[in-house]
Image (tube, rainbow, N blue to C red):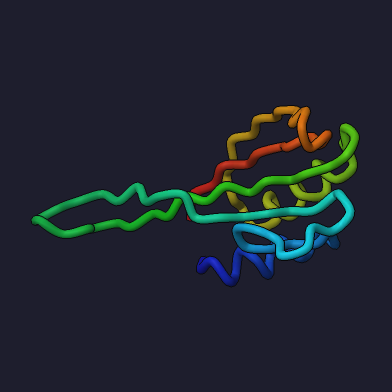
Length: 103
């Protein structure tokens, strides 16, 4: 799966989606996704298996279990394994639910 295909997949949530950052931030909930690093496996001095790590950030102005469930349904439908964490950003007054995936 490419970065572009991941973006297309995330759009299936029905929420606004962008890679890395917004020029003008929409009303929550919205999704930002970005490449973080690679986790390659080497053999014979080559990158034998290449894996790209992405984080998917779901932002909402209240704890939005419905939005989380919708995003997880989309990830599950694509058989993507994810790790999930959550923080509250006091200065922005937003919840950030972070999904870490590898493609």
